[in-house]
Image (cartoon, rainbow, N blue to C red; front, side, top):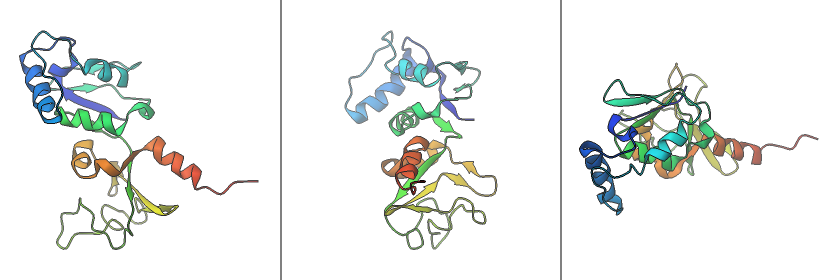
Length: 182
């Protein structure tokens, strides 16, 4: 099940010195106003909304861990990017990479071999996880290897954020490209 991991300090309503430092590091990069200790946490509502109806966050370690998130359709790539930028992560979330070039000839940015593996072979297991053509584009899940485990968001956000689709977005493309059944 999908879970959010976020620095514990960012799960509280009121900003403390540590959370102010984390938030201000991000805000200085993206041009947002800086925050002060004692201010309301500008990200608390977003985090609560993403785990709404669940048990919230377990604050037992430096990274608070959400309970299983049942309604992943409400998590956007922008939300995921923000969580990763704040030092967190999202695990076990299925996403799809949109490829505009042939996966047989395009190097995969996640490959660690030399020469790099192509999108068509990287992380596949038999026929599993191979790119699928829908319309004039190719789509590849973030599942990897025999287990089919989705990559953690911190692994793909820095590389593929601009061409990543959530599961509901991918399913919409599947529907658009499905033959109509009489």
